[in-house]
Length: 79
Image (cartoon, rainbow, N blue to C red; front, side, top):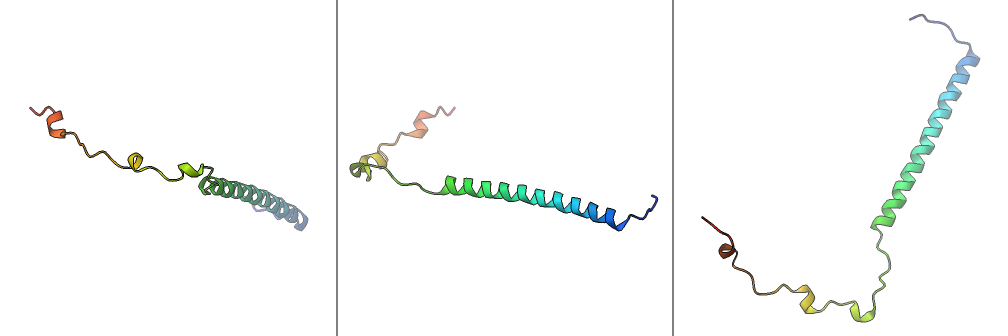
């Protein structure tokens, strides 16, 4: 690997190019992070509830399990 000396001006131009590339990469990362944050806020943020007043409470029959359970052993054919 041959070592050649670069002029100070050339080195400066190369460093500016690296800094610009890094800056663009950070802008893209920031935009992606902001987009992900906004999507998470929208997904997990509860919205307003638009239920009529008479439907805000469930009746007892809709949330209670029936008391008659099947006999699971009789339903299975054990041989």
